[in-house]
Length: 187
Image (cartoon, rainbow, N blue to C red; front, side, top):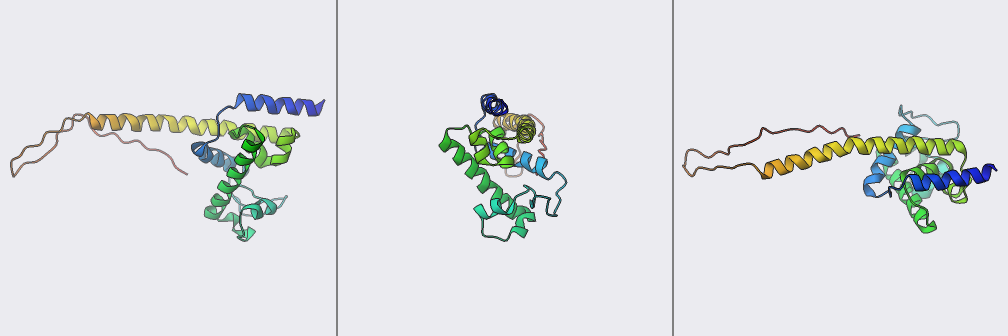
């Protein structure tokens, strides 16, 4: 009964989260995984041997790099390995015919690709993946207004009335709108 329920939940989650994880989704997904895995940026080894912003375990770390595991706390190195691991999970899902969306990638990040492919992901991994997916959606919603505003600013710049005088002493441009600045939060 429990096994059928997990398969059903996996199927529903796959259908419910249909955004394919492309290059733009990778940033949001990895950022959300970081926030769920290590929100306070702890640098000590966890109870299962995990380390760093993405809480890599030694075996996962060794899959993608020859660098010493202690470098998992170095954000630059951890980001490189996280991208490799994300892309590996994504390729594995694509080859298996599973949609590589944020939910499925997060679930695999938490309990392993084999557990997801076999439909034997524990409920705690489902909850984890749900939290990551919600954060990804929030990140996308934050980015959308900033992108839209940047697009409007570009259009506004193209519509500026530019007047240039050929007098040797005076050359200026008259702006129709005052400049607008958009602040976007980054990592």
